[in-house]
Length: 346
Image (cartoon, rainbow, N blue to C red; front, side, top):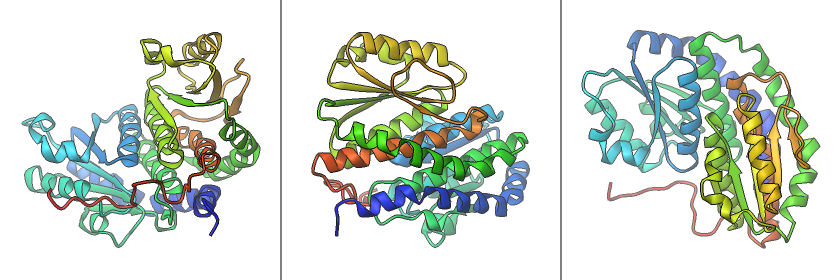
């Protein structure tokens, strides 16, 4: 078996999986809307572990943009430190995110929430037969997004797409433009796969920094984690302007600074990349607006805020994949990792 063959197939299969994810949400959209309307929560918690915690960060920001008071917490924090999270007199709903639907912390956190709070639990997962899916009040299960690889790629993006649709549905957005996302994903994979391979094989790059703001910070964290998991490369994520407050001391000729550029604050974010280039670092920008960055991944110009996060992922996943191969690693089976984390002592 060739190293990374599953990971590569899972990355390039995302256009099909995204279409499936949109169908999964559409099939249960009215049930979801009615569940939230009946519960009338004044606070929504979003939780996961590892990659899915980073996805929770993005989802919470999107939900806040839809007018919901939402926060993301790691499932372990929700389970072990409830007094720091739950406030008296509040009505909560919980969204759990888990590829396997069997991660110990998330299962226990959901059970504790039902026992302590009693609000609705909505699950986004890639296994409709999993404990989390079966025990939730409502489960969005994208079975076709399941993976043979340990590191999440199409599962993360498929679940991201469902969470984006949730936020849009809650505020009543016209989601017709979402139907174009699978084709836009294919365009990115076809158009920028070569750039990802070139950068992944660049022996001059020893450090990777991923910068993102607002809902894109969770995506930057996921890109950082993919680089670490797959390739064992030095990789960190920061809020874009926060990078200037200390971490930029590591921006040098052996660094690649990847900026996930938002439409809302592109001017300030692009300025950060310019500063990093003056310090000698290489840069890569991703966004929908024109840029003076020498390397740029162009996203569609008509994206809505709630539709865009998922499109920053595919090329960065390919970058981590190619870096892993360059480093002699098997991205299908990262060192010391397993697909499902079980902790019996919880």
